[in-house]
Image (cartoon, rainbow, N blue to C red; front, side, top):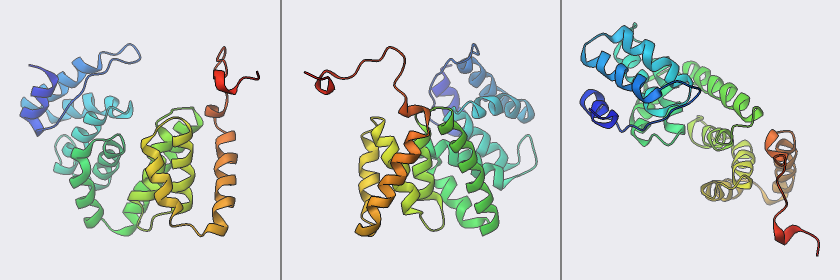
Length: 216
């Protein structure tokens, strides 16, 4: 049975395949979904969890489903929100409803604690040069906070767009519309300073300048 079919049987999820760091993640995902079918929920969590830590969004969502239901471990809506939010930030649109429901049901302090964990994780990834981290950070500030932080969302959307992610341009421009024109220059300077402190600002070894940028 394919990974997509297995996920549909268990949770009606979409799925994808990835092989990373020498681990056959696709086979591990299949084993985890089989464990769910076998009602061995503890094994399913043990198999999904490292995949979730490796930022496999389908595993993150499946782990969130188990934790929300209390399968394999006692019910934990805070952890379910954390993992489902990470799946959503990785474009797992199927996680949208769970994130919205948990955001509505959890107290403010619990939601803020999850947001803090997300920001810590994604900030560390950005500092390590993971190119998708700026877009995820921007989405946290723009979409997941009780009150959007337009300044920080603008900064991270700007960095994301600078890295070639065209879809971040709309987010950046939307945030710019919420910032006073006299403040926007300062925010742009802060974005440039933040970018300069990240590994993205350094051209890869042996990378030549685009022809249009070379001196004639």
